[in-house]
Image (cartoon, rainbow over all chains, first blue to last red; front, side, top):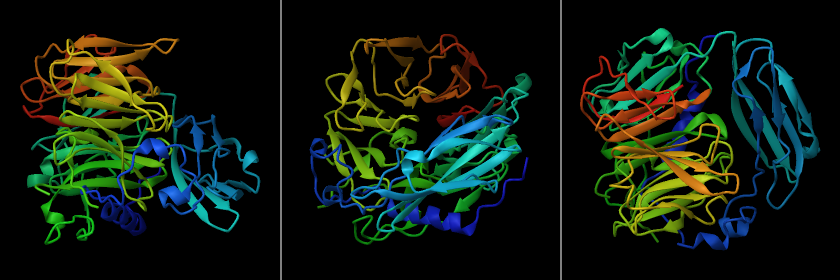
Length: 270
Length: 205
């Protein structure tokens, strides 16, 4: 099993960008009833969304047992107001495939070794706009059943971990790097499909009163994700809220990008 | 126009989620008047949120299906005893899944979808865990599990490889975390050395 690498700066920046854009005080351009256009996400005139192509990626099973193949399918990908003109998929193990006809964008693939692989899909539409999506595929050793791991986030006692394999009942505290308000854990999210991976490589994020923290070693240590101060446009009060005034109350992974998370923050009283 | 919202539930772990295809974010909130709303916004964050559902009541939380972007569940206190609703068409229409005061004593505390089945939601409110089940003809019925510990269930999760194995965390007390191997029919205290503390969130794998 390859060691889990540290968080690349580019990913941290992306997390920052996401969190900067998400705010609890939601500014509405218009309040509209959803029923009028709910099923018309293709219409940029209504949604005000750029005509980026939309990758729809199906990969199963995931995790996959070593020696077995995954089935992948991009054929539901589409381009609002246009047509898909090219697609490509990189399986993260120096294998790839590509084509022009989205109807042919499916197949199977078998990995040669255990590990986590980042699958990168690029969809291009007729005028040259491209959208890139990543998915993480875990190739696991199925010769042994998965261990049963349990993490809890508590209100004041931080994160605790239990490895239930072999009937272990001894909880371990996982708070290195968490102090004071960071021990008040509002939500946690773990990348899926890590049941077969050694707990020392578990990757997860938590949202706390003190900010958002990330671990790539099963909570043995936590690294705070530096978040920029929100602008006044995001928290429409005066003066603008600072990041220290926020309670980070929800974090969840981006289903389109295995390396990004969304952060929902709240300023009490706003 | 700017509207200020408050979190839709003190159970922060459930107030926002992303659909399976990553197209929309769902956020539950309370308006300045205290009524819950379900907001949707493009996951690209390049367009502002819009209201998918207005309700009366005082609490709401949301979870999206893992398999299909069409399925989303919300639970809470929407007034008139409506506690659980779902949409199977990407938020276009919300169906009432449960509206029965006899089984529901207070606000919902925790919820989860699946695993491996977007039509199954597990919801807790105080001393009960409720599991939705759809019959072949689309009829929805509920399995209700009593919580033997006597504490409020504040967090839930199940294991992907065996959905019958579930865990729950509690508000406080000596019983902090329980495990069940039979869809919450029976629960075993596995708190052991844990301090008496409220469990806000729980991840099992």
